[in-house]
Image (cartoon, rainbow, N blue to C red; front, side, top):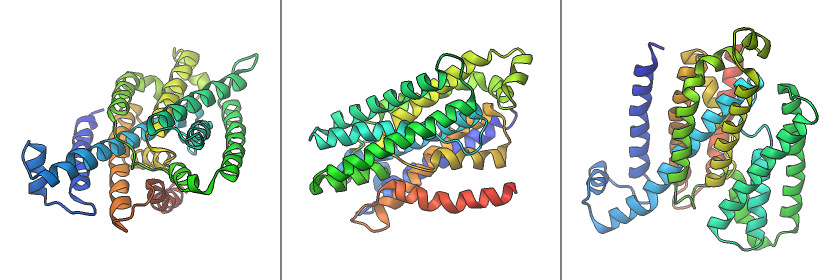
Amino acid sequence: MNRLVPVLGLLAAASLAAMGLALTLGSVPLPPTEVWAVVTGGGESLSRTLVLELRLPRTLAAFATGGLLAVAGALMQVLLRNPLADPYVLGLSGGAAVGALLAMLAGLGVALVSGAAFAGALLSTFLVFGLAHGTGSWTPVRLLLTGVVVAAGWGALISFILAVSPGAELPGMLYWLMGDLSHARHPGPAWLVLLLAVVLAWPLGRSLNVLARGALQAASLGVSVRPLEWTVYLVAALLTATAVTLAGTVGFVGLIVPHMLRLVLGNDQRIILPASALAGGILLTLADTLARTVIAPQQLPVGVITAMLGVPVFLYLLHRSR
């Protein structure tokens, strides 16, 4: 805990640097002095349009999405006691994708597509929890297996929707499935959910540290295991649903970031959870900056960049852990 303040201070500084870089780079690069002038209320008209209407909302959305996925991944790994758990392991992304694709197929607007994605994610949450609970209590293994089966069912529906969709609709659908922040214009709700989740989860850090060692040991040490597991599951589900609604399916952030932080900071959830919010935001902000600039003026789905970065990093982490 003595490292909490310096670690968060360093990550906060890196967060500001990453967001500043995202505001300066793009199809039309802007010097840092011009960006600062716009942020402080001045600057030219074109610069103000580029920064305030295009880059700043997207940068804030990317940071919030990365933070949401990283915190959700850290919580799911504690809940399932499985280092391979990520925010999508329980099928939430599949439910959100089905909802979003159906809305696109119906020709609905961006706001209604986001609402359909959020509804699909919540439906998947209740479906997995209900099936895993059944007539008795659920266990992490039962919850994980149920999530894998439900995710496979959503995957089949996604394939069917893509197969019957008109050709004109497919590019937008595929971009959404790969993770796309080009239509993320209202990051405020995502930031609110992220801040509330960190504030709620941080006091539970000590109990989560015990829960990570097993339910029996946690119960023997006085932790109310079942209410804690329900809380963790619902918070992780809400974080994931919010992230998927905002940016589509962005992979590897919720899997890689908690692992990287544990290698450096240990396994104290009181440090890992707030650090994950900042580190996940930094990673996705930088990835989205690359997606916008690597083949500018064309843009790549941000999920492509995170996958290209995540695969070698994860293989390296596996090699280190061996």
